[in-house]
Image 1 (cartoon, protein in one colour):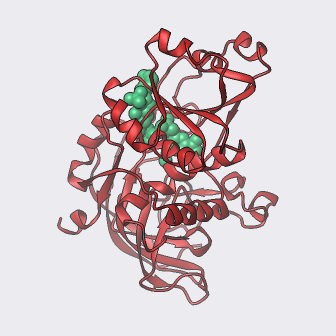
Image 2 (tube, helix red, strand yellow):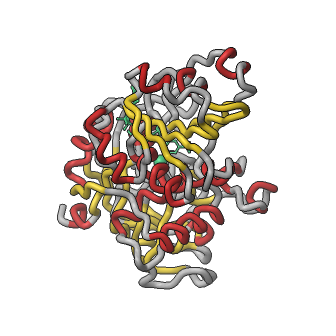
Image 3 (cartoon, helix red, strand yellow):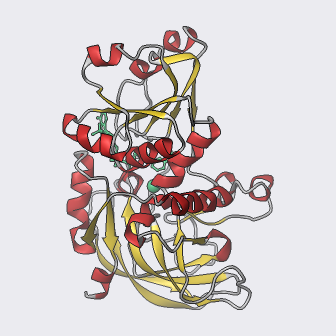
Length: 357
Ligand code: NAP
Ligand code: ZN
């Protein structure tokens, strides 16, 4: 099926080794169920970079041109005749998903993130045929099925709300699944985009929060963001003090690292959940699991109903990401800083800068 389209401005990578550059892409005119959104801000997730540089080639090979971006906040500019949930002028958001089959058991359960026919915001086959693949949020507009368009609470700053759409839901979902709250000791590993959201959310849920960082310079920030304690993970003595004491640890690290040293910090039947997605497999010590009946899990973003629940929770508690707002022309520089763990604590691209080009 091919629908009529229009030209949109975007930043794209032409190949794994190319920097992002200004380009023009085709978007479809809204069909009956669609919402066209003028993008105000788009967060920069480490997944944008893993994917566009084809670091995940063994699992999820990249398609080019690649327009990354799945932390999108904007205003509704146009709606199709069948759209009931959103109207022109609303402040809305889009995360990692833009469509699914709507009918499978997972979709029916609100777990669209596990639909076998899901459409990711960028790099998936475009089921409307407007372009070979879907194009993400490093762009001035996007057209999305209304089911995948979220409402942004009006008290939240739009730039700070953008990262909630990936960093927010990806940490909210496992923290809820493992019952993180009052009386629980929780570790957050890595203080980047996901880690700083995990810290804020675990604190808001009432848990005792410990941040593990490789960057001693982030200690004060970690406390300001909600950590009761901060551990510099390269210091073996500091690590030892916490042996066998955690109910739950959320690992957000984007690069190769030793997870066994964290497993040893879990109490009996404690769980470590990986949300970080380093390209290479991690080494797992069976003894670190066996001694203590511990478990390791993974967690993949979250479904649409839980994403709305997370946004509403953040609205009620005034929670947003700490963002460094940049013009789109600085995006390559921002990606280089992301690799060096030099971001406090999420970049958000101000899309008005794209309009100026
Ligand atoms: P990020 O902002 O770059 O944060 C990652 C943090 O990991 C860094 O700030 C750093 O924290 C730590 N780190 C980096 N290199 C390290 C190393 N060599 N050893 C130990 N720690 C290191 O990245 P992000 O956007 O939060 O994403 C984190 C990971 O989650 C990425 O792999 C991303 O693809 C993945 N992700 C997964 C999902 C999902 O659904 N599961 C969703 C979104 C993202 P310190 O300086 O504090 O050590
Ligand atoms: Zn992401």
